[in-house]
Image (cartoon, rainbow, N blue to C red; front, side, top):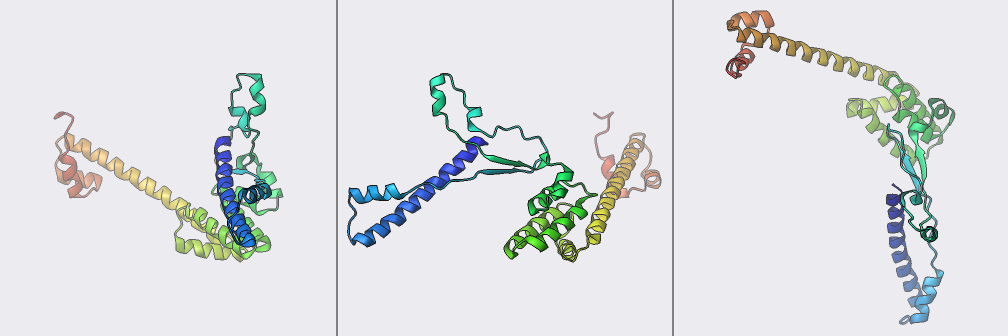
Amino acid sequence: MPVRMLTYIMLFYQDWLKKQIEYKRKIKQKEKKGTLDEADIEAIYDTIKLPAVFPILLYNGDRKWTTPSELKELIGVRYEALGKYVPNFRYYKIIENEFSPKSKKEIKSINAAMFELEQAGEEDVSECALRLTKILTKEANPELKRDFKLWLNQLIRGYGISGTEVNKIIKELEAGKMTLLEATIKKNREKAKNEGRSEGEIKGKIDVAKKMIDKGMDIQTIIEVTGLPEAKIKTLAKRPTKDAA
């Protein structure tokens, strides 16, 4: 990560320098109204200073962040004399999972509320989403509100909620309520449980049907016992049996 972050900065500097040089050359040419000589070029370079960059890394994963923050930690220096030539670079890291739940609630900021919502379990999502929405309504400018609303939209969709429902939920959150989000998450959770239960029941019936087929029982009896459709039983009957294998 230190190598990647430094590469981003160097690429930014290359592009920035190119644009600065082109701009200053045009200004100088307008002033001279002619071709620039070597002294003019040197003067242009003397006026250019690279801007300072504050490199920030935001990590929202679940695993512990163990990557070094400083580039020198990744460089093996075989000779002491080379130490002074090692690039001195480090980035500033914000690791979401290092903040305690208590501290995220105490920090009254958009970022803290966002971190809390990203790491919330299903039982806390509604409360965290409402808290973030309140802070956005109170503190954010229109552009920031729009961007965070898009982010919140995607996060809520991750709970299996449709786009139409998400829009209704966000409107209710903006009105200071979270009941619709709570109810929708609970409803989807129950639906997923029921679907899982149904799949398990069907699998159990199929297993029973296979055993009955292997014992040579007639299709009508298998239908009565398992409740499976005739077409499904006929398909199971065509499979290779253990004896045939």
